[in-house]
Length: 482
Figure 1 (spheres, helix red, strand yellow):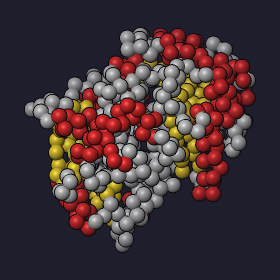
Figure 2: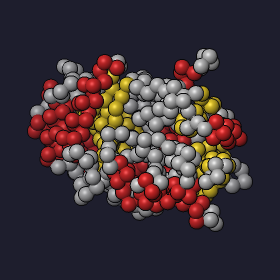
Figure 3: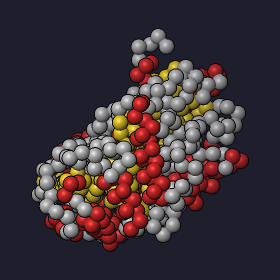
Figure 4: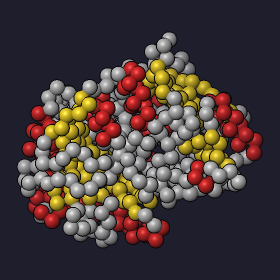
């Protein structure tokens, strides 16, 4: 391509993904999305869609010879005066969503902490964040979507569907976007949210860090077990700890300065609960020390040592905004229904304390979950994990293609040691995987992402994309292909 933008716009946020589409269609409104889809259909080109460019796998950029429909110019956020609904365009980034909703309307949405993620993929995958224990998932407030679909005759049109649509097929299409993942049914151009929660005025932050060299298997086991026990006991919908969200960053012991870091945020009227939480989780640990470096998606939080810092909620959100450099990466996920079994804690110790490939940028992040997330039934939305107490993200980061093999081997071996060859199959302890952390290694991804909701999602696919126009390696399959 002669356009100077081409080489940039065919790349994902993850530098592993560089595509060679025929072109990238930059769209600024729904009419332009419709035109792009119709032109692609007329030319017989495969269509993939990108809002934020943060897809962990090659679902958007991996479209050689096709067309990438890029929604990044569709980034508006506003409140409609007549309906009172809050409209978010698919290309809006999460920080822009939070900042605009807060400054203009004093409300927010319980979405993710990574500031540059696009709303299109985040919402359709059932996004969560630091306010989710208190307010649920972002899709729990989604009322209406606008989707560009293609019918059996190959005709593209834009349709708005809501929870109150009179047509049950339209209600099913809305339901499928409550966590069914992006890129399967059409292109969502706009979302409308109803009655979002008031934005907190203040947030309290706590950080604790421990040097790996000060830990033993016994102290490590005590920390992991105490963290799991705490959230097993404090993840009910009516828990007084619903305003608490904690992130345990278990980085590799890859150097003399390697650390484990616990970050927690509390919003509510009882910030002393943060200190109670810290005492309960860290009771067997040595004294905390200062955090030395960023971990995972988070910037360095407040000074460590157990002191609680009060900040304006908006500034706290910005401080924990997940800004990370563009690095090659691989990710895996799991939901937990109960605390960690002993064998899993031993697997963590094996692969983190003495990793096969020492890398200070690779880690296991354990997030708290539950409370208001679990207020809905598994089939109330397309995302079925509504009983979990923790959510895990395995992360590996590196810089050069030459490092691919060893980093992929580390994360894959770690994951298999935790769950076996079939992943965290739902049982009494585990509850599958998170579709917004896609992983092409999963052979049984339909069961792990969607559980019993998969057949209904396939029926929605049959109704709204019978020609499988919108597809990628883990898009919803037509019933005949399932």
